[in-house]
Image (tube, rainbow, N blue to C red; front, top):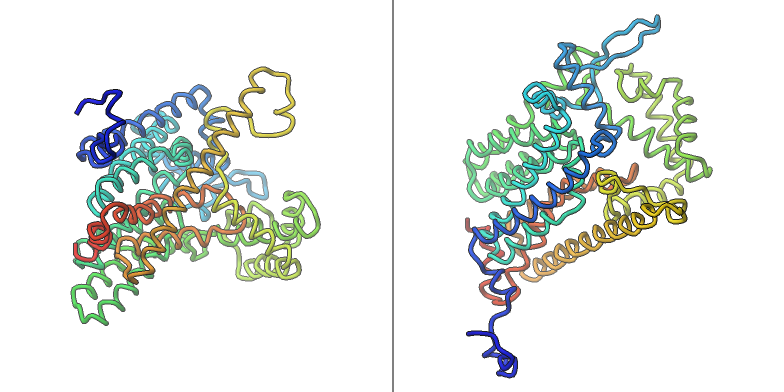
Length: 479
């Protein structure tokens, strides 16, 4: 039917189908083409702009540590960093803070290309674009064509994710591994198999070696599968649970043993003690006594009698560990009201705040009254661009959370939780909850974003045809 001026005078049932409906129910190649094109355009633009001045726009404090460790690996100095001994001579300190996965990737790309920064960022963008496509396919298959397009489109338009993929940070590789682990776990809940359990456990172990967040995830999931398998009397699920635990825990145990052998401290990472003292306790003290964070941090470090460098990177004796822990916990208890307020504010920023790395990547100035009051013509425009980009992140996040809430409300009524949705929700909580409080950076929530997108779009199958929609949402239990 051709659209003319008289078309809109016809009864509603005779009018042409809306363009959105045609697009929403288009074929998979069309949807993939739209999603991948949007993802590629945004990420290529971001990379080109940031590559004008790559070091300040693609690196932050943690990035320099990853590059240093990668360079030391290539120089044959092991997974270690240079350390000034008491006598002034240089020595090599085995790394206990960061895990080896990400530096190994950076070192490999540096060896192959000679350009560790550009090669790593490009690889991260490629992985990010592939994740947009995979999310489109998975959600389309599980929940219908519109859900697939919305899922892929949301991730493609995620400015926060675009910025993080453009910086030398672990999130760009950690998040896809977490996503694959969720898919594998959901499948094991329906059709357990040892090969899939082995693969899923290996993926979880790889994610932990990139970012320590998931170092205990495999045993937790394995115990859950073991209990479920025992209740169902499903021998294949029990065997899959054992396989998952072994595949995920053995590499982690090997790294803990490495740290014990080379540094004398059997730990996966010393980040928890650093965060307890120099993030959580520092934030409580700073708020209670109205101090700058750096001054509060210096006071607490001095109270331990141990240097900040050693607290963050070195093996400590049992007495030193206890001293750090006691100073931190006593500070938090003595300033518990301030700690609660600080934790609430920083958690709110983690969950709902925009990430300012996007401004760094695009070379935009940080927002301040000085910038807004500048007579510089370029600065008079960029603050409003910065504000617009930050607001766009908040609106995007609000739309995602609204979809997640909609799915949760729909799941309450029939009291059935599809395995894929439940698994994604559980793993998202597993990643986000430990990151609440100090330092309160929004980037810590981002690895859970693809999982929350799956949860959110699960409800879109119920929008037009109720029976068909319910079948779409619950079909995971039968796959």
